[in-house]
Image 1: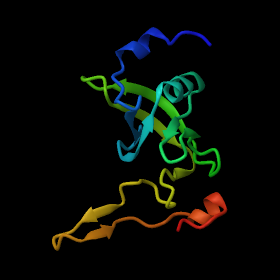
Image 2 (image 1 turned 135 degrees about the vertical axis):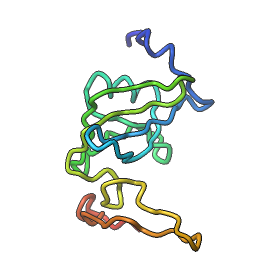
Image 3 (image 1 turned 30 degrees about the horizontal axis):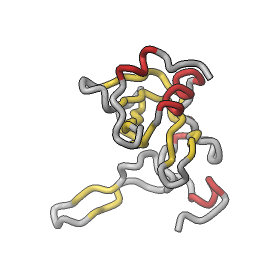
Length: 135
C-alpha cells in the first residue's frame, strides 16, 4: 500500500482516527447530513469523486448510496481552521440524503413548546430504498 498523501498530514483525527464530515448541497447550501470519515474513506472519496464514509456501527467503509442509489458526487472538499472537520460540497443523486427517505437528516425542528416536529416529508419509504423496514 502507498504512503498517505501529504494533504492527509494536515487533518486532525480524533482518538478513534475519525473526523466529522458535513455534506452540503452545493446548489442550495442546505446541510444534508453529517457522517464520519477515516483516512481510507477520505482517500477513496477524493480519488473516486463520490462520498465514502466510515460506519461506526458496522465498523466498515460505507459507500453512500451503494444500496439506495442516492450517491453523493463530490464537488469540493474543505477542511476547517482546526483541521478537524470536513465540509463536502456535494450533488445529492436521487434527492435523498437521509436513511429515513428525506432530503436531509436535519428534518426535526424544536418548536415553541420544546417539542421536536418533523419539518419535511418522507420522499421515499426506507423499505423501498433498502428493501427492509427502518425500525
